[in-house]
Image (cartoon, rainbow, N blue to C red; front, side, top):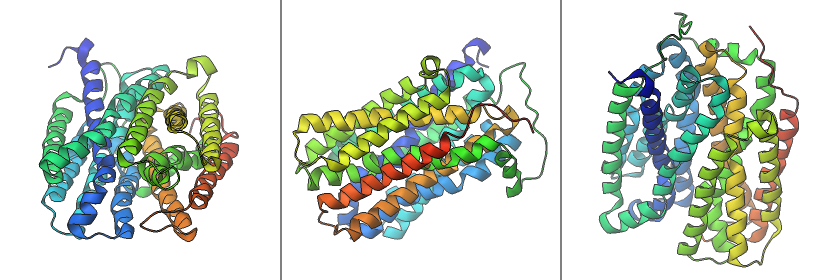
Length: 408
């Protein structure tokens, strides 16, 4: 048995590795899309579906996962659910049709759906409330390195050895994470008791979360917080840089990779800003205002040098990490026995928002004259302004919330 005083350190280490795997699998299709489209004759519409279905599967399992965690504990649920990510990676590596690829992505999304949310619940059970934001920021920052591996390194490896080998390796690493979850994770530290009742598992169990008044005012911000940055870094950033600024693939990759690095750095810093701003709400307001301003700037610029594009995308990546403070705001509103349901419901809206915003902006760009060959500046301008407006509306609603916990 691990010595108790070191146990949480090892738990944090395993949680970071697990989230890195989740980030890698989540991002991997983006850089491989040209290879997959060529190998399987996939149309752009189906390619968008293949990329987005991960987030849909991820989001749909959040609420039942939260109920399961509150009933059976993070250790059992995380160890069991990540098996689907292993299976999905194997199916993806063995795929010889678009349908097989789609099934693989669905299972990956399901299996990875537990990695972040389960980690956040474990933090609430092992650490004090005022440490949550800092520790969540560490997991997001270190785990985010998995997303970096799914950019230029994955592209280079796939060119040398093929993309299928990449997913065989990913399946092996994910299996090892499953073993680590089983061996290292523990639901609570010694001396902490969770009032885990044995209520039947019904979807109506989630309604207890909506009794919290502040939760309802935070839902729109959950829909927009992560999706407002993911729509750039995970979907339209590269096409925009190609169509509007004429950048080649290497230059586009560099900008997006540095943007991702700044997001990782921002996750760490935003996890600590509450000590400066006084509460999590002010941090969320600060970060979301930054994203809104930068999206508006991105919408209206046309002819600028690449150095300013680097600065703009890096700054956007940094401010886009404010969602870690939003998660911290959620966790102060609920007691530990409700934390699985609370954070999983928040994650449902976070990742459901990504799927929704990516789908809608795709429709906007198509309607404004975009096709598989590219899109005009006006198409991206309207799409980015649309995201900025929705984030602004969400911020206005979020301003009605506070951090006073209601007991129920």
